[in-house]
Amino acid sequence: MNSSAPPTPASPSTPGDPRLERVLFVHAHPDDETITTGGTIAALVEAGAAVTVVTCTRGELGEVIPDDLAALRDDPAALAVHREGEIAAAMQDLGVDDHRFLGSPGARTAGLPERAYRDSGMVWRSDGVAGPTPDLHPAAFCAAEFGEVVSDLSAVVQSVRPTAIVSYDEDGGYHHPDHVRANRVAVRAARLVGVPYFAIVAGAESAEGPEADALAADDTVFTMDARHVAPRKLAALRDHRSQVEVVDLPGGRAGIRFPHGAVEPVTVRESFRFVSEPTAPEGVSEMARMTTGGRVTALVLALAAGAVFGMIGTVMHQSTITIGGAPIWSGLVLALLMSLALLAGLRSLFGSRAVAGVAAVGLVGALVVLWQASPGGSVLLPANTPAYVWLVGVVVVVTLVLGWPRLRGGSAGGATPPGDPTRASSVGAQPTGDRLDALPDAKGTPQT
Image (cartoon, rainbow, N blue to C red; front, side, top):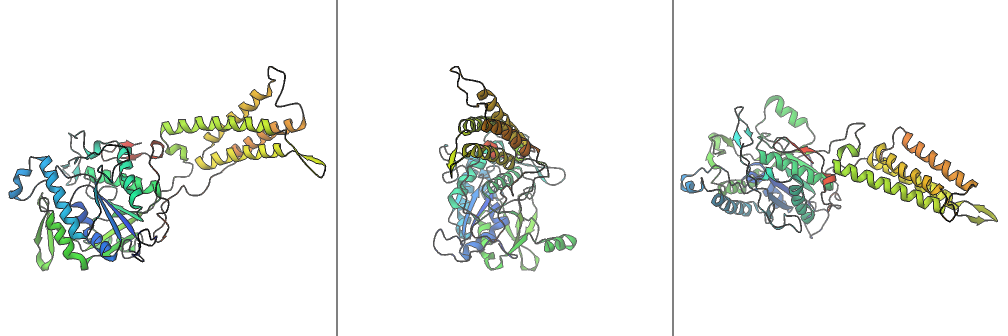
């Protein structure tokens, strides 16, 4: 993406060309994609970019506007089918040939049966913004396991290998629970594979005064001028006639009338903010970001690894090679280097002394056990110089690694800045419980 628009292709040619922009839009309900990003979608398609639109629900609980569709107002299942047809028509008008419903084939975790995420519904709060409904349906998008939803979206990411993912900001634009959850899911899917994430900037076109100045000064905000594809966006909006009505406004502009009566101008300039991966505060380790199960697993594996390295080092520390007639304690040197690499690597990887400390317990524990003579009288740690150096060396390695003030590698893998043509080359990681950092879902509770 550049300073004036979301990603555009350098050369829309052969499939698989790393220079071709592949943009994944994640939206909550049919019509959201057109209202907030329709111009950008049409402009990207026209420029030759590969565009995929994922819709999380079928909008079963949407409010139906026209009276000729009144029969759909009390029939969520029929409305879902109707809105499937509306978004199919809208995709055609926008030029999109890759649209998927989350949970359906192509947007479902391999091996799991197909499922439909139901509209979670919303209520208007007294402050004029949307809030969660008190009677959440068990099949609702916001009631689904967070990890399952992320895994389904990750299946799309693996399939299309996007160079950018676009969805809502943290409040979902107007706090609709499905929009908020779509944000959490899209952000997580983007972070798992290091794909740049762009949040829709609501109301950017109508911003005035200090707000407009702040947006103009923000170099992470990118604006797509979609006036040249405005007819496509208007046609797609008219396709969603069960939910929105296109009306004429003074000055020759078009507007959108929503079910609750509000009328807003149709945006022809759509803005997005690049959302960088937050940096963990100083002193917050990778262990602190893991789930309880993940921490227990890491500690158990570290203990086992320390014990294994201790046994291997004890067995090999007496080995020597002869150079120029002089014996060299090659086994001892290698055993100490292996121990140092294990403990330093664990501390660097997790940014914490805890995992390295547990591995050190396993390492020293193995030495204590092997110090004892076997029933046959043989010993792996005889009373000689290499054995003493091995024992003292392990203590020095443990003290050095655990006592060092700071031992941490580089960034834990944030999204690559826009403009890097290779940023999507590593897509393919599957989310697991231990990789899902705690983020609030649409109900305000942590998801782990």
